[in-house]
Length: 211
Image (tube, rainbow, N blue to C red; front, side, top):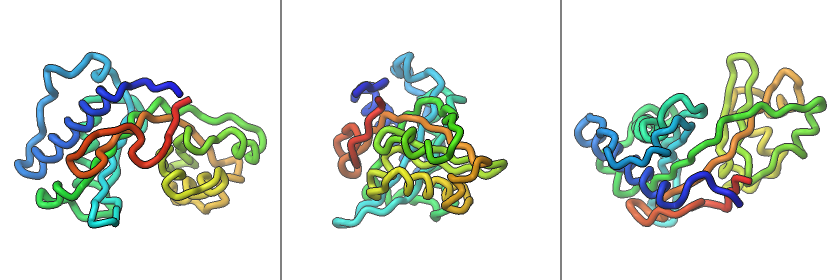
């Protein structure tokens, strides 16, 4: 198993993401990029930030937004994605400062998405690997993305993963069988807090592999 980022990188990014959340939710201001940010974390990269609210033994998604493509420096994309996940996810009301102590933060650093080439859609069942790949389904203006850890969390096989990615794009679940639907795959280094404000570890919700 190969990783592009070390656990120290993950801890640094998750710490910055949490600081960004606290600063914005309490003061409506963005934090400055720390001068101590390593140069490789200033390289452009895609990233997603996921917020999970922990209540007793229950965990509920509270926000998840990111940048699929490497259009911004990773550190800046991390800060912006953390804020967006808290206040701009249209599925949820904005996170409040009072909720921060009950929210665990996950961060996924993405490889650039690559189009999956195939002649028969059934080839996707062999080309896509659960636990390795994240997916983007695209048809025209319709797009939907699921991170590689999502099918692990839900126990999906490849076919279910393809179906749910289509649904995320606003398409019928069987749209993966239509040649007009395109798929892009990516991998991710995933880091997250074991509990709100707790220790940051790799793959907190499942064994996601990058290779």
